[in-house]
Amino acid sequence: MIPLRLVVDTNVVVSAALKPEGVQRSILLLALTKPVRLYVSNPILSEYRAVLSRPELQIRKGLRAQLLQLIANRAHVVAPVRSLRVSSDPGDNIFLECADTARADYLITGNSRHFPHFWKATKIVTSREFLTLMTPHFFR
Image 1: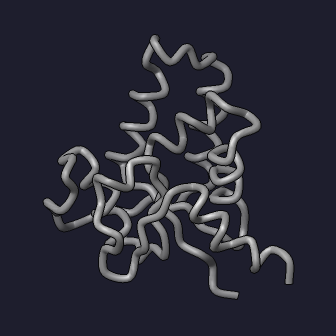
Image 2: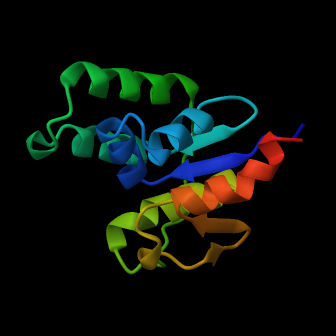
């Protein structure tokens, strides 16, 4: 079986931390489970760390450490070699760069308005759209 390749925007990781019963938590757990592969870059890992540490989010230190450790242990780190200027939010280009390098199938985000619908072969979707697309494959 060919693994599904995913890149996950920081807003999905934050929502996963804040809402244990939410769709984003399911997405993150799925992204960290075989045969799915989560791809990150060092800039993405740094952003995850920085945003999850924001005091106003009030994410417990233990939960933050667990999530970051789980991601560090299970994600595949890529090193993009090309800078992109595609997103309407320049800070989001790191996700497209990662998706490009990883040849990701999906980039999952809560801010789809910042991205094109596709970047090369990568489809940009929300968490709900991704679950809708994947549900038929879970119940074969």
